Length: 153
Image (tube, rainbow, N blue to C red; front, side, top):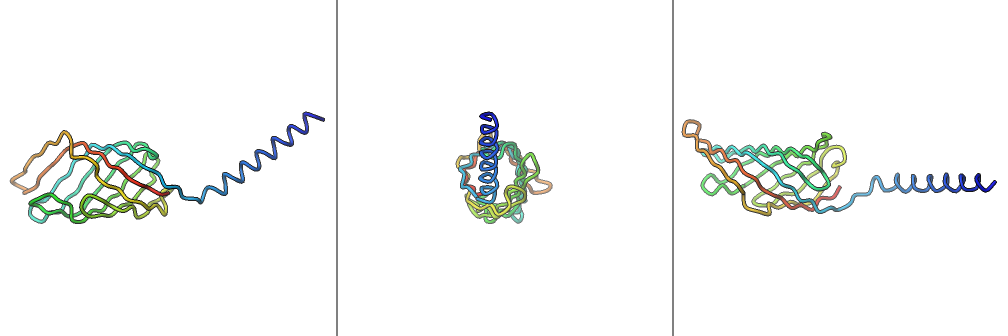
């Protein structure tokens, strides 16, 4: 009889924990995210358009690949407008748009559906290598960098 009472209490406890878990699934939580990447950016020096491919690691996300494109001032390499798609190892995507040294998260897929927040590029480019291609009038940059973010999902 005592064993049955314990089993009933355990079953009720499991149900309560399950309901709490279901109730919290739709609740978004703000997280501080730190990311490090190795990237390559190709800049068209005639019009400032660029594309970046990067791979790295991010807290709360894990392994991440990023594809970024936009336009920058060709004389200063200051971003004027940027759009980014970051893809986690499980395929969930996080989207961002921005100007200058920051961007706003605009949503995504999977666990990032409805995501919001802000990211800034915290550090200078490290291990920077550059190559000017005179034939295509492009600048190719490879580097390491880090980003700090506030991400709500």
